[in-house]
Length: 217
Image 1: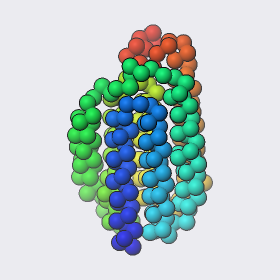
Image 2 (image 1 turned 90 degrees about the vertical axis):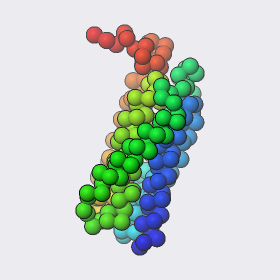
Image 3 (image 1 turned 180 degrees about the vertical axis):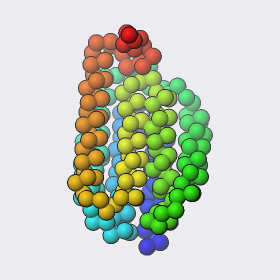
């Protein structure tokens, strides 16, 4: 049991690393591949939680998450990044070293926040729970640090991965249809946002969020 918990906490730590790389990545295509890698780590975390907690429902969710998060969503985002290119927006508005500092501060703050949680189910998984909470803030950091609206979508994806991890930790015995439904909802949300970005790019010929002044009322 203890070895499984160590595996889960270590895999969760790898989610933090990949999130920081997603936020600081310059090329949208590279960011897409890093997001796919993070989703693969998340699937492995689901499998470790399923094994540790005998949560058979998570095996179905793991399979669905592999298809949607590791394969389908990255494919959609990679195609969008290939079709809509704006090289001058490949940099972030925040230096990567500051992203590392802010990311570390957010992770530490999340760890302090979950210290007060007294739930037997996550008694030895508080590092993983802290990682799930920190992904809400890392997603926000991704959104505010990008000028490229296409790269801002990855902020939502990071938040969604964080919420999925939290659900897997706290409600891993929930009916599989609930967990699968949440994942599919996220896919539709990303598809809708990609369509919206395509309309913006087609009409305004830019992905720069600072240039979208024509959308003001």
